Amino acid sequence: MTPREKIVNNFAEWTAFSATRSGCPIKSRKDVYPLIRMPDYKTIFKGESIKIEDFDEWHKRNTLKICESSHALPVGWATKLINIYLKTRVYIGKEGRQDLIKWIHPPIDSGLWKGIHENYSNIPQIYRKTHCVQKIQDITTYERYKTIIDGCWLIAQERDCLLIEVEELWQGTKI
Image 1 (cartoon, rainbow, N blue to C red):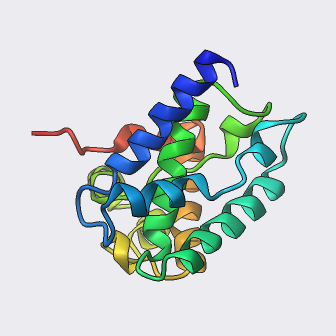
Image 2: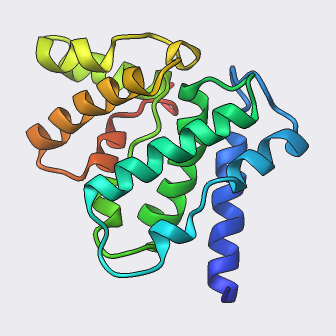
């Protein structure tokens, strides 16, 4: 790992860990960092272009692996760990396979739900999907999570942006 890759990786792990501060059922460093490191990131970082089907299968498999390892962590929180980590390394750090940036998911939380609500509550085909639950801990199955991501894909299409760029609606820093 080059110095830059190590710095970006460490920062990605820290940002994912920091995301557990509010509402996550586990918070200790010794419990969270192993879960962040559990996915096989090399599979999606090394090699040629990656197809959406391959990324989706990887994402689901690794989410469920985290959940099986820590029964206290529902699917919503496991996906948030993965998605924050990937947002930092892929979108901000510009790492990973060609096309990977097209498939990474926005981290789902109340800040994103607020932004979607303000912009899309009047569009039922989007709102029903993105707001099928109201809290991360209520995302208890990967199928429910996928419904929310499908709604985010509709937003990305409507805005003509990358899926991760639906994150621009996030209002976590709004005062």
